[in-house]
Image (tube, rainbow, N blue to C red):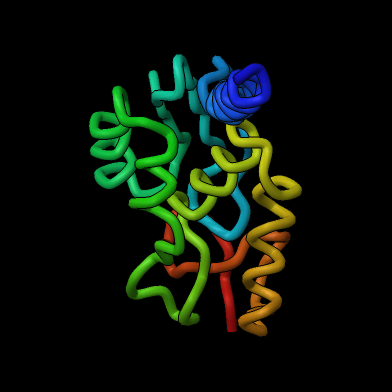
Length: 149
């Protein structure tokens, strides 16, 4: 009986610790990679997005996202928005603000990966995408002043 109780306590402790990783409170600001936004700030409280904001990028989409995300569980956001490239980009398979957000959440909240820049570069390298300007992968949004021939 003691062995069963000890085993049950161990299982409960392990599952509680793994959930506690997602439940931590954190606020971070990062510079996206391969996307039009210049900066993204995310606040997480009790495993849910408290706030999201972005500087530049596609204003309508990012403003809408900043209204939709608060109150959503981090794991749900990751599931919904993972592998979500910008559509209409001149080079297929480019990153997006939401891909960056997912990788940031995985890294800062769940403790997964090596950070969004490293993870997104790995994805882009695997797709053999190498078109960039000062570290910014062009999605053709027209918000920057870059000129390409």
